[in-house]
Length: 485
Image 1: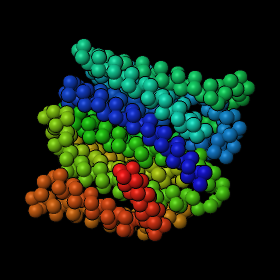
Image 2: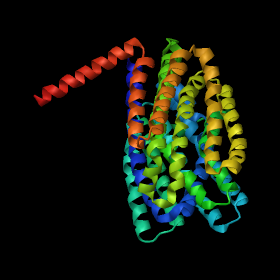
Image 3: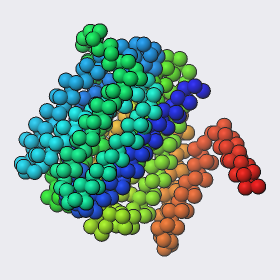
Image 4: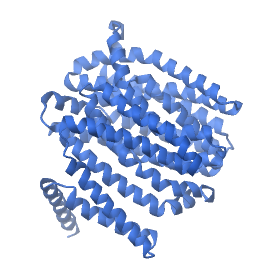
């Protein structure tokens, strides 16, 4: 029970932190997209995706190692955190130099080169902030991550809007982003010093090559999975002649990144808990996997159907008529939440067992397929081909992990995959049928969601879960009417 409470509590803080950031970022993206237009917005999004690809190089798989150690023994975790922080500095500088150097080489336009140079500085700050969040997660003090986001995201959005109102350029927006990231990263390190006394022990640090080697092995999965998410836009920006279409794709993929908030928060918070569960070998791993796989199907179906139904109208209404293509891409992009959520949930089960090679090779296989599929499909289908290529890579990654974890953990395929798949198929069929009889998109979505809810409760929940849900609904109903009375 304590482990479940820990996951819920820490995932709640991470979810709240990302939600605050994402709500503000969504509003910011709306203003940016409308004021900059598809071409300039695409350039800004390309720069952000470009430097984000290199962020995993700064921390490798240290988050996994730290979560395992701190989850089992807090003192050992603090000793390891000292070593990780010392190694983190040179790795960050190396990644920033690589980001700027490769960006300068493959882009001939001076404006793009300068923009990527600024984002290379943002990488330094972002790396510090990410490292701080990973330490907060490992020691299960995720409320500090919430404080960070609640402080810095409103500041970035407020100053950014002022820059835009004053006629600022893409470069000035990028400079602001870099400055905010650096300040946030520095404050994150200060919080680590204050709450964990980790930085005070650096003078007693002794070099350990094994930590670097283990971090590199554990970091393969993070590196390739990050490329799976950011790579489609980076590749498409390099091969597309129509630069405005880059902005269309960027908007759809940005929505995907914003909406993977909940599974990301749960997966990150589960690492130290799964590490303790692995030591006990009490079956917690399989229960976690079953629940997260069912969540992947239901979450992706609910949001994917919404994207199909109202995506075109919503995108044009919010961002303007210049983003009509992005509206048609929104539905397919949101369906990518299914393999993304499944893979995000399954990967930690390999990492806590130190099966770093298996986790990394699974992500590598997906990344390799994506690298081939995006250019090929984009040449035939345009930006929707990039989404399809991303789906091919993410799906292979998830299937590989399911095969590896399912055999080891004994995942109930019928409950975790087959039943949710049937539920999603029924909801999708209901949506298509409503559209075929001329129902409007809102009615089609409402019916599909109702079918998804009813079929999900009937097929995707076990008896104990249905009883718990019934008790919860009854308690809420009674409390509501007691207050009304």
